[in-house]
Image 1 (tube, rainbow, N blue to C red):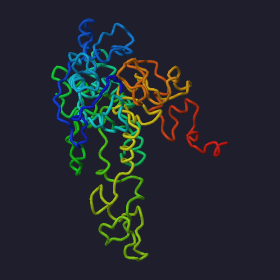
Image 2: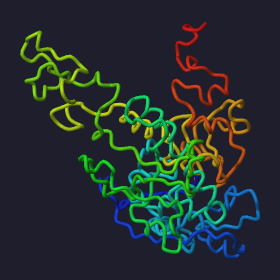
Image 3: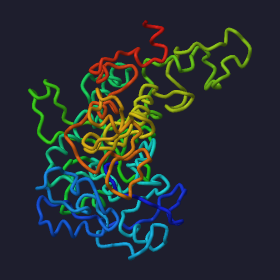
Image 4: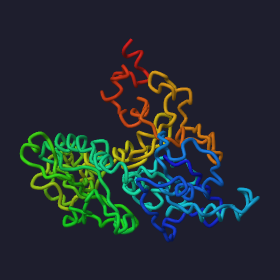
Length: 442
């Protein structure tokens, strides 16, 4: 995560392993200002700097004209300091830390200041206030933390292919028979489940996303998870789309993917369905195709007689397999709405704007990482902040933004097997990834 603030949770009350979120009362910090005096910014950092006594760039920006305090971006309470002379092992220090920081709804998932491994949709279950605390550049909260100066960029970035995956979803949907359209109609986007929690009245949601009551609800789809703080949303073009723009590929609206378990399985993977030769078999037992021992009663896969199933989608292995794979891909190889997997070298990154503009140690090869290669590939930090562990993976190199983004940072996302995306720029081809490639292709 972009944040270099240490989230230390030694207090027993925070070691929750409950399947339910912790009760929290959050106060939304006002949006970052476009300008303020150094004294005003210092007042928003004083308590933070009593522990984070040194940092790489106080405002994350190299430009000294950017004057921001810690709570402008991260929220929290900068008026709290630990008791004089207290150590980190003392309860008084921990109580002050917890009062100054924004605490998570799911503390068992955030055991340190490092990015959690394989977090999947965890951000959608956390409060906007905590998401802002750990990563102000996340798309869910960037309006408040960065919008005063960068709102047009936020709007464009949230609609980019790196956020919506519209090209990937559409290519897979059309070629696998899920959708009949060659132009994208689905894309990834999320909006607050209760907008006033994340965006006060004086800060309306500029994205103009509208929450969906699940387009497939009439078909028996599950109701939205009540524990989610952010729900799948439709994302709209901020300008009217005329016919000329439409011919050039400009899209008006993108809708979320439907759930794979309730989508009719009319796709090319019908081979996984039970056959239909046995008309008197209402719902054959999965795994027992020849229960009666009669060879002529064997079912032929992919040959339904009149309909796909006597029961609804999601039963008897009758699911949309390509759609399931799309859902799996967006979690195991997430786009910018979610954190990277942060579980092995080459996969460390944050979400949103921070995913690109805050660099992690991912690659030891100077051809790919340039000056960052010397820091290794284990995701450890080089920050001056004394509260950040030096040997723990999942931390950015520095508390600093950069436009000098190495190719290795792009490869965190643009590496699939097989592919010809970014890796071809590095001189690799598909078979180079295989362990036995030298024997296959001497």
